[in-house]
Image 1 (cartoon, one colour):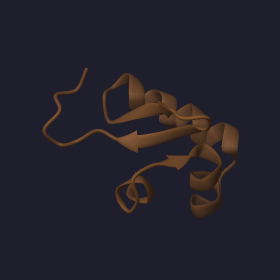
Image 2 (cartoon, helix red, strand yellow):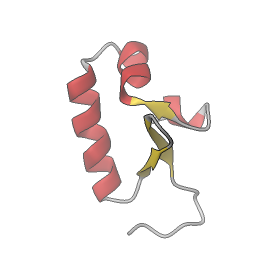
Image 3 (tube, helix red, strand yellow):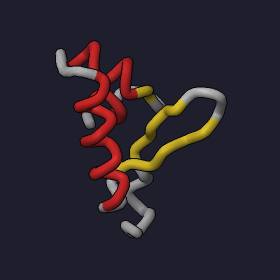
Length: 59
């Protein structure tokens, strides 16, 4: 998640390149983090992910 904190948002592909994992593996983990309210998916033409603001309660 450090990659997401250092920028506004990132795609699973961008995160996979930084951490050295497959895109599919990163996407699966991002989905799990989203289920627990740590990140949220953005739909702006790309499937980007962003961290939830610390003031937002988890879903």
